[in-house]
Image (cartoon, rainbow, N blue to C red; front, side, top):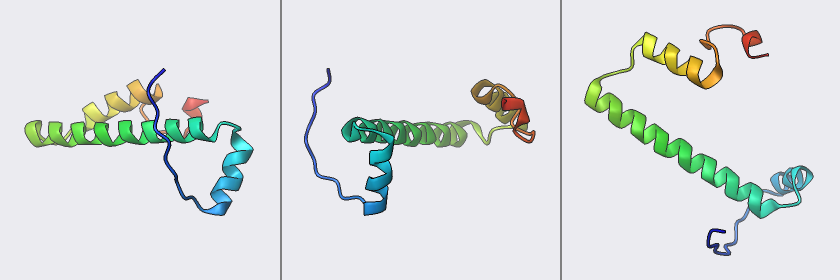
Length: 82
């Protein structure tokens, strides 16, 4: 198990109410949300750096990425994902 540190976080009351409806493990839920946000930001930085070095992504590259991520080209109405 990874080392942990106790911190205090202040959230709007309505968010806490909804959060408690979703989980009885608030710390785990928040930890996963933070990890997801960190991954998102790191990926964004990597993508920006790639484009700075190699130019903007082509339409074909974007379509291929959408297909790999979502399993379709992402151009439809969303019914393809069902």
